[in-house]
Length: 186
Image 1 (cartoon, one colour):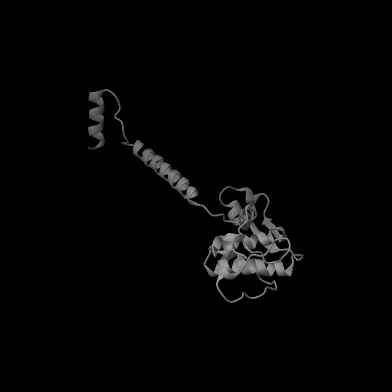
Image 2: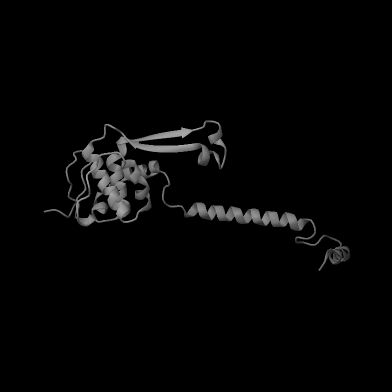
């Protein structure tokens, strides 16, 4: 059906036909693509379950105690437990260009960088223990642990002891002594 046929039908009916035709096809296509992009972006945003920044992971780490799950070999729990040991000693530095970083979509991505460091006053034993837990999660290919390993570069950390991750007991945040999870000790 061409445009002349549409005009003929409209003249017989006495009102415009519903649907996309002539110039409205272009606007309808643009509208349909806009709706499809909106739906796709909402679906992708709903899919993101894990935090992207270390500061968000630290917030999760201090929200609850992961020591039992970490000693059972859960990679996510090992990572979070390692971060919880350091949570008071991680320094967050943001480098940004003040006006340009507020531009939607590209500002934060291109003109704002966040860097994390371990405070120089952190207890060396605590840093070594945290590194061991994060490294165990990294060995299980837990992506955030792989990315966080750079936090420990330049710090004196002890190598991991041999053996599976399930044999290690978590270390107390306050005393630095090994803890035995409830129901696992004598």
